[in-house]
Length: 177
Image (cartoon, rainbow, N blue to C red; front, top):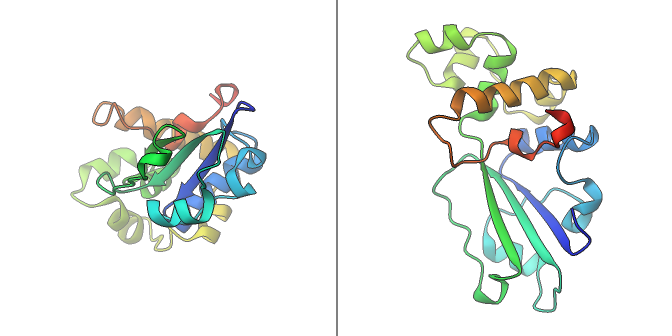
């Protein structure tokens, strides 16, 4: 990040937060923990709470807010005073977390043959019911290369359907490609 800007990273859930933390620990993201507003991943999801807790009218740096969430419809409307100072970038994970596990397990083709949601597949076929649990994510992806592979593969197999959406893979530094 540049010295003239600050980064905020808002994660919707525990699994997303665990993945972003793993990426931060491995210095794999386009921003570092030092770049983060407040030095941490933010849990606040609504714009009003974010404004109250992190913004004030005297901010003189540009802020890039990365919202990591699974909803394509969730609004995040900041007041006009912040419109020029804050750039909001949505990183959609629907249904990325479960798909990362399916990819890592090498089961994409089997998954596609079945008429199941990714969460159902993980629970009923892979017998992994806690895939959105932060501890599970940390343990499962202790091999950073497996996480990286799964993120890029997810982007590759979903890119045609959602070309304009960012995924977590888009937040990785180029040297991690």
